[in-house]
Length: 146
Image (tube, rainbow, N blue to C red; front, side):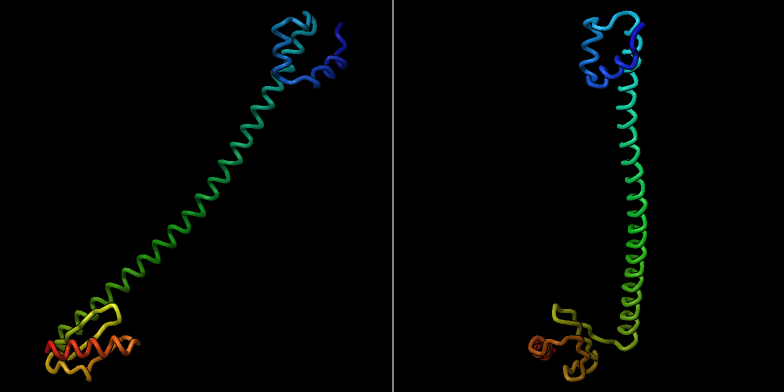
């Protein structure tokens, strides 16, 4: 009969590869061979289970991250929709103002200028810019073009 305690102590000191080589070389005889094969199978199963556990943890983390990104994507979509509605509303208001008051609107990099179409007087303009040099140059250009 094989001393199983001593056999397991010997097997614990060996790696999987060493045990496989020993099985192929016939190191363990008939009574110990099935025990060694089972021990090797258990070692392989433990390694596979550990790898599967790591993959499962990574998959769970990916799912959690994906759900967080879904929340961010929905938030961005809501904000983009609000910005689109605000742009549409401002365009509609500008259209109504132009249609009703017959205004001249000038867009430039320095601001938005709104002039009364009938007078085209730069002094009666509504200037939405803080840059006075650009405003004066634009007013002079508009005055010359009128």
